[in-house]
Length: 220
Image 1 (cartoon, rainbow, N blue to C red):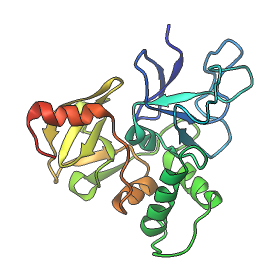
Image 2 (tube, one colour):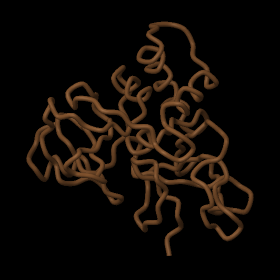
Image 3 (cartoon, rainbow, N blue to C red):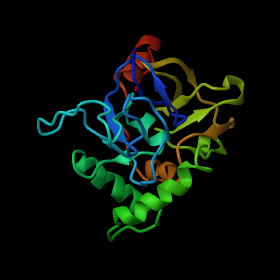
């Protein structure tokens, strides 16, 4: 039986057999029986990590240790409120910080600290202790890499990617359709992260997205 450690774009943690391409951390969320007892701990640094780094090995959900979470891809992790790790994904975090500086703080030069980023992300990803913070926006005003949901597809997340909308599933993307710029959508990706994407940060997207384009004969 799969462990409950896979994160959706809605920020929910579910049990599915499909593997992820990134690991994440929100603190210790499980008990000694590897059962989830909370969705996040008090910490604010929700990160995404590489699956392999410096030959490190971790037993999943070890007692008292942080809960290893897994994501389909980085676009999913960003929607759920995570950012790149500053150790195993150092270069990606540098790129994230540069886009944060421009998109969130409106500065072309200077530095930004993790201690400045994490509290803003915490405020933007959670409406309260349990609910994901969401907002409405025209699809055309959103950058690539954002996750949204349509009123007509309640409960289904879609990735905006290269002018198309790809339906998210735990195993990958499918059901491509063109995006209507005038459509009003519910945005799942936190507002500050949307600004980071708009400023040029390009998330890593699961290979199934490219396969969906090839299958539909859409040029990228």
